[in-house]
Length: 169
Image (cartoon, rainbow, N blue to C red):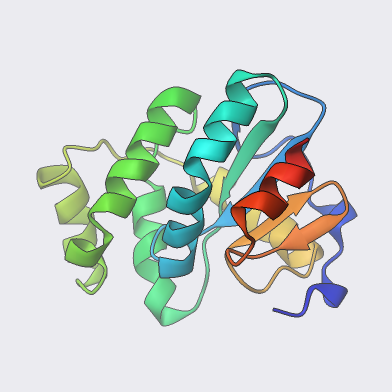
């Protein structure tokens, strides 16, 4: 991932799902269909959970709709995350990622059906929210997910746990 083109200052801390409160923001631009986003989510989970609970970091998860055909299924799943309730949203994201292999290659219509019938999730109207997040990612020139920003440090899922801990210290 070429991070030199990303304008980190264009990724704000207003939009997104806020988990915890801290001056140190972890901005996570992800798509729920992306296997690398899933890798990031689970490999960073314990470290981020601890940092949030200790007041060291605030996670701001941004579910970014992408036009790439393989990620459009994630766009559908984004509609089933309750962005108004951070703890519930985190649980729903984890549930969706846990079942990604089951729904990840379905048709868009079947992904919606899967979310409703198999995962028992409720669809939310988030068109304006999704557009604002996509526009923000475009302004920042974020082309790939996951893109994670902590301060002026930009990276993808391939960060080591020790490097992540050091950034959160």
